[in-house]
Image (cartoon, rainbow, N blue to C red):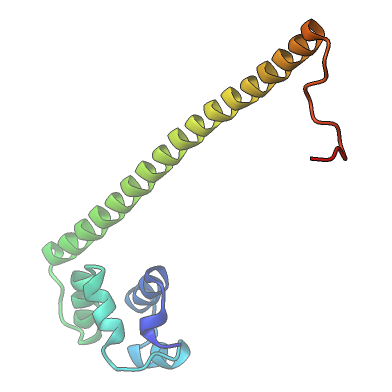
Length: 139
């Protein structure tokens, strides 16, 4: 599958697998059949994971990483995850209010159907005629 045809969640998962895992970009490219040497790096940029990428590069090169850059990267990651959770919560609230609205509409429709049937029954009794269509009746 080309990397253009992948979903955002799949791209994100692969980028996170690279950042938090032990596999190289090349091995992930082969594992997921990703064409192009920069696809995973582009996804890392797309999802704002550059600080984590820089930390991974520093670890790879055995560079000392200062606590400040580590805290900045963790802070950015936590903010990103918080915004995702807030967005998810917002969607679930809107879905819940939509469900409540649909339940009310269904209840109203069911009450309308009951009232309509009762109205026909009363009209049939009062007028002494059949109003409802009989099954199989010719039109």
